[in-house]
Image (cartoon, rainbow, N blue to C red; front, side, top):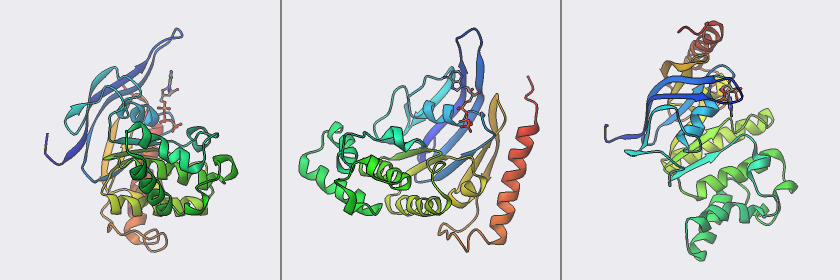
Length: 264
Ligand SMILES: Nc1ncnc2c1ncn2[C@@H]1O[C@H](COP(=O)(O)OP(=O)(O)OP(=O)(O)O)[C@@H](O)[C@H]1O
């Protein structure tokens, strides 16, 4: 393994068994993510993107293959990894305040109170929710709740941040704001990000690489390098010639993946 590699997935396979039939969700996935890289994953619906992320997060056992984080095999949720899911409504505890939600993993990490308070404040300020620390999640809009989930992940100071369609349930304007928020945090923190999305434009806008998955049973169709400048801008980046070329390329790959009949 190269010293710069954060995450390495080798020959990953996952078949769900039970209820009288097996579902081969992932056949053979191999890729790596370098430290500090922002990698997006796109693919047809049902390709196994969530399955992959759950395996990487140590929440689901794989059927074959190997996942390592900083050289150590992932067999359970590894320390130093944070996950933001799409369903913010279910990922926050309604009986805790915003502050309480962000603080909880820091308590579990064993941080002293003063340290926790400082990290929670900084994270809430970074996502623009300093004024809402005492509110409960159900008093906030969807976009604000998702910012709480992001603040919770950031306060934890993960080395790897996994995001599973985190903005799928928010409106387009909020989505653009949250994309820029995550990009800003990524630049600031130097964290490694693995970001699953079904939105091709979003994958090209955010990623330094886009892994396009095939239809089920899943393999990596192409590892697309996004050679846009790291500084992205919703208007200028998205209206650039190169952005259009890249999104067309990724779009065509996903379309061909959808049409392809899985062989073997
Ligand atoms: N717990 C489970 N038991 C059995 N099959 C499952 C289970 N979870 C997922 N699957 C199946 O595995 C395949 C991959 O599902 P997964 O949710 O990982 O795909 P996805 O790419 O994230 O989909 P989407 O883009 O629609 O969110 C699907 O065929 C799904 O029905």
